[in-house]
Image (cartoon, rainbow, N blue to C red; front, side, top):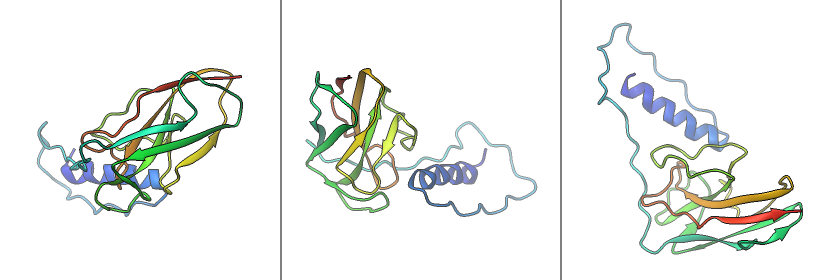
Length: 161
């Protein structure tokens, strides 16, 4: 796989998560040299300032809640901006539900377990099945990548009635 294909694939993943359409890739030459295992494109990660943190304002760890569950995000040491806004010491929230942290070298996935708030939201309402659930927040940079080091909350466990 060439560096251009890898970079185009990453750009497509990032733009797909924002709801934007990726540009058409340039056509590849008919014959190209074989790729080596070291020919991998990397996207530089955005640095996070020391002491930056995200946390849940509500609910609290151990709370019993009912649907819809109101979730409020807190942040210190950084600003919340829309995805695509490349401002220093900033990012946008992602809510992780019943899942582990994603690979920090890849864009944060956009799934039912990885909810993006690329519009700069700091709260939401979600509906979850009855039972115990683990929630975690992860700040993403302007390209939906975790910062370096990642700005991530402690997980909380809630019970939905």
